[in-house]
Image 1 (cartoon, rainbow, N blue to C red):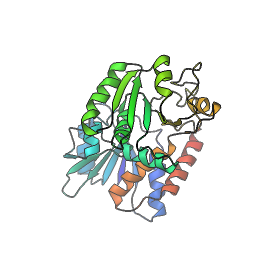
Image 2: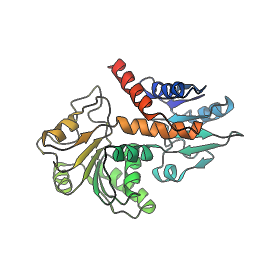
Image 3: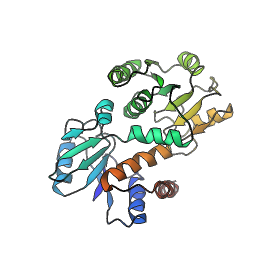
Length: 280
C-alpha cells in the first residue's frame, strides 16, 4: 500500500496515475487517497508506518510540516524545505524526499529545452517555486524570483543561496519588473495558482504587457491544459507548455523509489489525461 496525504485529496489524479502504472507492470500494489486534517500529520506518519505502507506522497498543506518528522531527509528535500515523497524502510524508518525538482527538470528536458547556462524568471515564491528554483540553480541557471509579496521572494532566494553557485535575485511581481527582467530571460516559469480551474481567466502576467516572444513559458498549472498565461505567450509566438509532464515525472520518481522499477511514464500520462477529462 502507498497513498497520498493531504487536505483535501479528493481532486487528485495521483491515485489514477499510480494505480494504472501498477496494473501495467503487474505489481500487487495499491495507491489510495489519505485525507489528513492540518495539525495531524505526525499521527498520520506514525499510522502509515504502523499499517505497513511502503510510503506516501505528500501534498498541501503538509509538505513543510513533514520535514522535522521523518528520520532522514534527502539533500533536495532539505534544501527545498519540503517533503513530497516518503519511503518507509524495513524497521519503520522513514526517509523524506522531494521529487518536484527532479520532475520539473525531466519535463523541461523532454520538451526539449536544455536550461544549463540560461537565465530564468520564476513567478511566485511558494513551495513549488522553491523546488523549481532549486532545480534551476543547481543546473547553473541564473534565476530571478518575483512575487506579489517581495519579502517572500527574498526569503526564498536567501534560503537557497547556500545550495547552488548560480546567481539568484528577488523582487516584486509588478509590470515594470516583469518588463525589465523578461527582456533578457530564456525561460519563464509560473508557479502561482493563477489560471487554475475553476478561475481559468486568471494570469500573473499583465494583459497590457506583451509576453517575451523569445522565452519558453512553463506553466505549472495543468488544469486547464491551456491556461490564460499560455495563450498570452502563444499570442506573441512564444513556446508554452503546461505542468502535466512535471506531475507525471515527479510521480514517476516516487514510483521508482517505492518499487525499484522503472515507471511506465506513457501509461501514467494517459491515466492523468483520462482522469482530468473525467473531472471536467
